[in-house]
Every structure is written in C-alpha cells, then in structure tokens.
Length: 62
Image 1 (cartoon, rainbow, N blue to C red):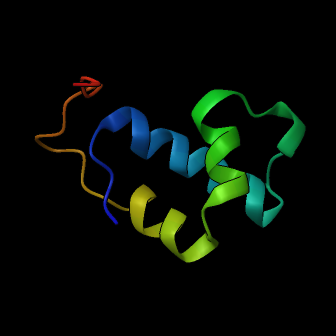
Image 2 (tube, rainbow, N blue to C red; image 1 turned 90 degrees about the vertical axis):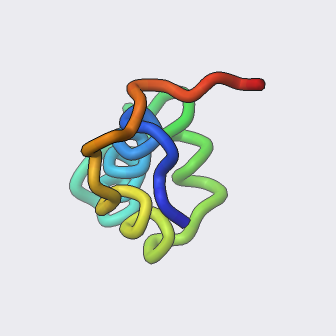
C-alpha cells in the first residue's frame, strides 16, 4: 500500500525506523505509534518509499 499523503509517509518512515531498532518505540506518538503496532515491516517500507511529488501535506477525513 502506498502513502496517500506526505504526513502518512513521514509517519511510516518513523515507525519503520523504530521497528528496525534505530529509534526507541517509546518516543513515538500518534500515527507512527499505531503504525508500529499494526503494520508489518515490508508494508511500512512500501509506504515510506512512496514518492512525495504531487502528494498533499495531509488528506481530509471525508
């Protein structure tokens, strides 16, 4: 699955670094914390590797 926004991509990158042990999981907040618990490493990698060009900063909830 690819990231739908830059914010989602950034959160996936932070969660991926925590999953790999480069960052403490206790330092995570919000979306990155829930991604760490619910998404596997391969899917986090796919989301974090999504190109940012043309992506909105945040997506609307509607």
